Length: 74
Image 1 (spheres, rainbow, N blue to C red):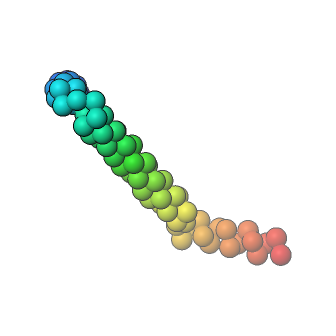
Image 2 (cartoon, helix red, strand yellow; image 1 turned 90 degrees about the vertical axis):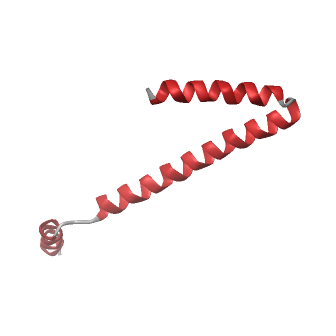
């Protein structure tokens, strides 16, 4: 249902932008698209940071195992 509503709102917005003329409508459309892309990249970067932080944390048992293996090698 949200997808259909989003499509309908996008059609209305596109129609309104076309009515305002190519200069104003083009600038607004570019701003909307560029803002959406930059926000998406920011969110992807944030997700990547959170996932890499969670993966890098070792539990105490894993840390003890890594320490034990490192000591055995030396």
